[in-house]
Length: 556
Image 1 (cartoon, rainbow, N blue to C red):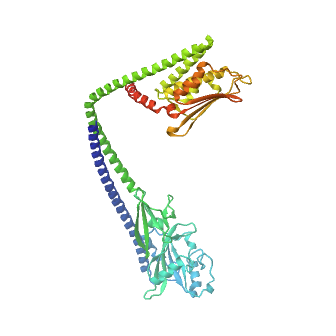
Image 2: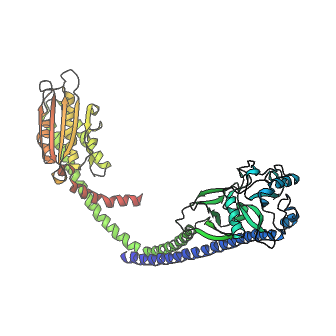
Image 3: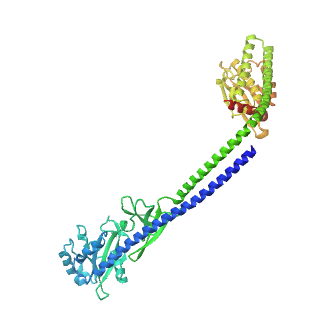
């Protein structure tokens, strides 16, 4: 069998090794393929976003080129360009003309806004409060025209953006650099409006470097940079240029929200930069599926299949070889079983003889010292019943010992319900169990015969404990009958005295004493735990019972 086990183990080792190598290869190949596919999809999407941004920036440059000597104080500068703007792109939120107006032209500007039909033609600040134009001494940037014109946008013209926290600095920088610039993300149109950006392009007077104004286009960030299909393998975010610890993303309702930048311990995040309005924007791509986890699952499936095939091969091989040696092994086992069965029968004969000898001694001593035939008969039946009970308990445990507490149950001794039992769970050996069962019966039966000081049966306490540890451990047992005395309690029988003072202590290799206190009768027994437990006897019984148990299981 050792050769068979070694050969099967070798085959299993080779199969498991091959399965592990294949799964390792599958794991790395899957990571490589999925990673390459994800990176390719990210690159395609980033190029599409860049193309979209470049087209919007090109629209701005075209509109700037179409403006020839714009009428600064007119409220309909964009009207001639309307067809060109909408023919090119229509996804902007608002297109506007912001004119740089000197203080002397502000009154005329208000007249032009009123003539163009705008609902609030007065010059106002960024918070929509009317300005005192007489107190203005420097040119200011005023919104003069918008596209598209609707109920909401008709109220926009007339606003000045010089003190606006975002657009004011942006207009100044665009005028200084002379090229289109893009703002940071901000809320557009209204207080609870969509999040977007504003692209600003300066318009110079023809033939000079003098600034006429600005063309602006407002775009929502969601369709401009964060547009993504549900079937794409990644989730798209935009790093917030205002706060590196936050990122912008589109929620389930299509609203752009700011969220803390996610920690990416698995390395699933890919970053791509796009350029728009003189600024670099960072797009973040989070893989929707964990590539490593998916590769691990696939590798695990391959490994399980390989191990399963290896197990099948090893099982078939072992089955074939095992059938060849089974007959010879069964013969060897049967011979060993018969030898052990002979030993078990010998042990059983020995124990039966011991039990018969104990019963013979019980009968002889009971009848010899019994003065009354009826009383002797009751004692004899009780003592034999105690022996029968302990043999039943030992048979139930296959002679592996008996719990000491079980010897004090009602089926073992009379009137057990009046005995208060306390002590640790101890499994005593068969030899000790036979002696202790007779001892407990003798104590209980005589306690029942006695009369208490108050006219009732005595209350009884049976307690034990173990002192010390290891080979020096001592078993200490104490039996105490309360409400009795030497005057009221009938003396123990001659057989009981011999059992209490000599037979039980000698069987356990200990010592005993019995005495009366002021209110009770006490019997104490001390013995080494080695004789009470007798581990050598339990081991010998276990060795003899093992093959018999195995045979019973095979027959069942």
